[in-house]
Image 1 (tube, rainbow, N blue to C red):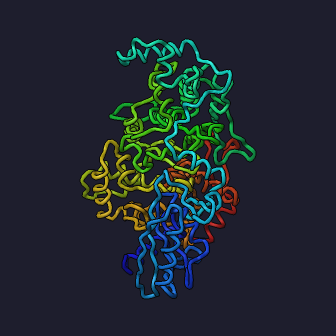
Image 2 (image 1 turned 90 degrees about the vertical axis):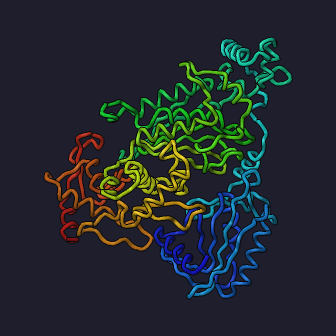
Image 3 (image 1 turned 30 degrees about the horizontal axis):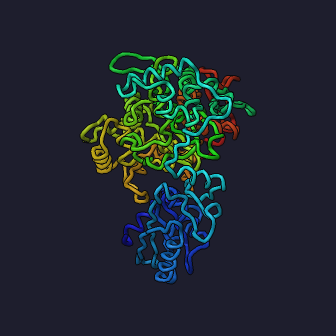
Length: 595
């Protein structure tokens, strides 16, 4: 890295106004900060990152200040990397800058089976961290134990089921029939031998955990955590005190999958989609994608000690369907390549083997091909016009976010205009998804690690290769619509500052944002209502005027204006589809005073 590249990196941090998921800047004028080992551990446990020593931050403004003795700090940092367990093979370089020498350390991610990375001189439960947004978060003792338990090839689904467990005769026979039909080698074996062959029975002839979950009688009677928690969360703008509505799904895996799909489909509701000149009724999230996420959560969750008692949680909000399963992503899988490469190994081998032969009560397969499930979901999201599934790998859980609704392409189409691009439709798709991602980063801090890199662009354009997707991103960069980030572990692109919806020419009422803060959109909202022909706008019309495709972002700005007494709803019921918003006297005064 040279001084010019360092300036670009510091400038990039200034755009965010804070440290980043993959970059940490510290002043470190005279010595290594005491918290340096925390950052080393956090980056090691979260895929890697860059530590910059000699850059100060003050309220979102970053400045190169240099270090007093770069050679000594470099030596101390190298020694500290060697004191981590496992040792970090970091690349440390000195950058000569006009404001002083800077130490830049590129920290690699630790292999998942070697995590958690921590100080070797202290127990892992006392010195293990992960990177969350712009900070280092200490892992709890339980999280550390869960990571250690999951970092093995142990198939916990083959564990004996609790006493009193029994198999359903009908499901048992369905499994046996499918097994015998799958191979002539199995056709002549007796029932018990065949069930033991797929680890449905343990050496003592008792049902295993895997068998109870797929073909058991009332699994929840002996395995309470096999229930699934289902919640519909309050929306932004719901009356104060509104609580989520919750249900619990019970049954074997096939029954759980059918029931959850029915609930989600009903609570999402239908929307009308025009495709190829025809109108279709579809849910706000492609059901194929919903099914893939639910199936993966039920089949691939962790049953390691300490995690077996946890349940899968399905939550539906105004923004997304979020499915959280116990245990982080199995260490044989790269989270950045989900949907692009086949899974080389699975956590619950026995559970997958049994479920692979079974169907749901509605007749659907429980397990899709290990190489095509997420890829097929990505294609469905592409055809629908929605955002590909967003994955978040946490220390003791794994989340999949399915964002509701198709992206709004109107802004992208208008911005791209007559740009001479190789494929106009592809450009609109990438720009509109990038726009939605920037909004989602405001709503879900845990999603800030998801960037529009070549892998995510390939999933956005599925089916597509990373090489082709990268070429399309470079084309958008050359057209001035996107720019490449310099702060990530791998090249990623965001909307160019002047093209972001937040940077649409402001009204006279708008004021510049303070360093490190997003511009206040309330003045724009007031001006939009004032410009309307009838002096009132619906929530959707406000979102269109402010170029906000996210329902939650739209509701946030409406809520802020309403809470400040600047606008008022025209109807008592905030969920009335005919509800609109108009300025109050105070709102008009604020607007006029700012003009």
